[in-house]
Amino acid sequence: MENEIRMTFLSKRCNIVVIRNMIGAMIIENNPTITFINELKTVISEAITNCIVHGYQNQEDKYIDLNIFIKPEKIVIDIIDKGIGIDDIEQAKEPLFTTKADEERSGLGFTIMELFSDLLVVESKKDEGTFIHLEKNW
Ligand SMILES: Nc1ncnc2c1ncn2[C@@H]1O[C@H](COP(=O)(O)OP(=O)(O)OP(=O)(O)O)[C@@H](O)[C@H]1O
Ligand SMILES: [Mg+2]
Image (tube, rainbow, N blue to C red; front, side, top):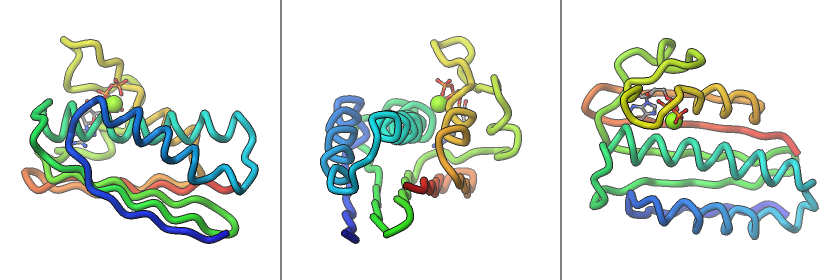
């Protein structure tokens, strides 16, 4: 069944579990494998964590937009923040590159997103925000 959910939520870590559960509920009709569900939850968690930690520098009063499109052949997810933006997208996508090495970050978020999705598009502008487009085929 084709479906679409568009939502806006506060940049709080506690919302990651809400989104993980929601996306699981949303795709259950498509009979995904456990692996598919886990990969999708991982991808979306990495993207939202980046919005919170990097885009908004852990400020909890900012908003993240999430659009989910269920299509016959794939699931499409857009995640948008209006935070600090990414200086150099190609560099940011390199495995182990992080601007927060002093914290618990390992620089693998984008690598994981690429591994577990069929298409990853990143658009970003300094001080304007970041747009992440992900597609995963069923
Ligand atoms: N939404 C965003 N806004 C601003 N900068 C971002 C955003 N997402 C990623 N970045 C930048 O890209 C870098 C790489 O992101 P990536 O998710 O690969 O690694 P990380 O978040 O630093 O570490 P990890 O995901 O392993 O905890 C980040 O360190 C950050 O500088
Ligand atoms: Mg990350």
